[in-house]
Image (tube, rainbow, N blue to C red):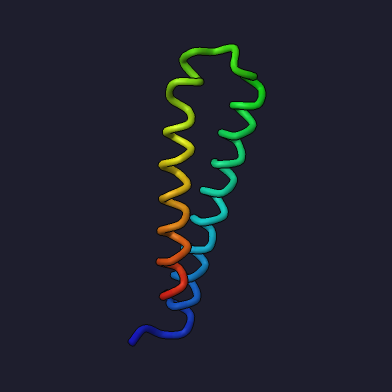
Amino acid sequence: MTSRTTRNKVRFQGISAYADLRKAENHLVQLAGIADNRSDYINQYLPEIIAGLSFIIEALDKFNDDL
């Protein structure tokens, strides 16, 4: 069993990673808003990236619950 401080450090890293991914998701959504459907490249690829990131965020959230 790990010591209390190590456990808290692990939880902190998990929570920080979650917050960073949420921030990245927000940035990508803002990018889409700024593009305003004027870029075929962004329209083609960004929705898939955002959807994939959402799945990762959800998985990390569940992972963090068990830390």
